Length: 432
Ligand code: PMP
Picture 1 (cartoon, rainbow, N blue to C red):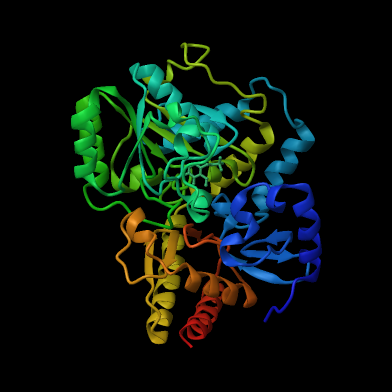
Picture 2 (cartoon, rainbow, N blue to C red; picture 1 turned 135 degrees about the vertical axis):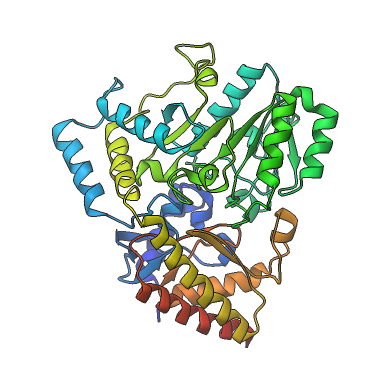
């Protein structure tokens, strides 16, 4: 049992003097769970080690990218090879980029052509610009609780950190920009229909997390994605799947392969960079042909297609292509789901466990959780107590109720059974 983090506390005390909240991305500050964060020393497989000498079973996986676990030997070897034989960056074409682009276009059903960028945020903001440039329209529909990075027009009822901190409308977002974003409830096709009846001809794009991860894990209800496809097609609006989280996680071809719905544009990130900064957006050739330098829609990047990042991504995808990989992730994740549900039931703690493949959230409410409204009925105090109890038992979860957790191929049955054991004790602490 972990009682104290003296070195991390000292490092954090210094960090807060240097960086806002001591961090470079808000949720890392652990504000929602009433702690200060352990500082990480290193990762290895399914484990994280902090500078105070504690080991954790990691379900954050750097917020999704590390589906193979930390420091996978083949990813390390690819990085070393690129570093020693190529260098770090050229800002000029490399064969590696062809390779990753080939891999992505072959894997993701809707992507015929792709542009690599450096983050999920860049992918979504570029896709929106492209959708606007392509359709000549300005309005965008997004869903409450979905997070698409921190571009101005997405910080409106956004999920993830913005949801955790209760500042869905960030100061600094111009009202004129916000006015072009229309927010609909997730899983509510009637609401989307109503919006389109009013303004359909002005809407450039509907952007959606095909499985939401940023209000916690919320799956699409049967027919929701198909309905979005039909409505957008009818109005000449582009459908954008933000698969930054779900891409190569829910299936090799992402959520669109799993659910059989084909968007016009797809955003990727996280896994395709294997733990280094990469994002991508892609879609039909005819739409992608509007991107500079072939077309007029401008988008660029000094480090885009960076050889180190691309080789880490390629090495990761190579392993994900092996047979049985997604079945293994499913087996492990189902085992965890079963254990956590049982443990919560035994302790009498109302928990709703939402899961799609290797992406899941335990919501502290009786459920069902189908959208932003139902997600935010969660007992966040109980979540914080659970989080703390788990951390002290060496289980590293995302420090907010409104995040998804991730299974990796490095996790073992033994890791999961230890996690369930910790959860059983944690739930009993909460119930007492
Ligand atoms: N879209 C989704 C669905 C995400 O989950 C995230 C990040 N968690 C982003 C976009 C933004 O990606 P990044 O943090 O790499 O900018």
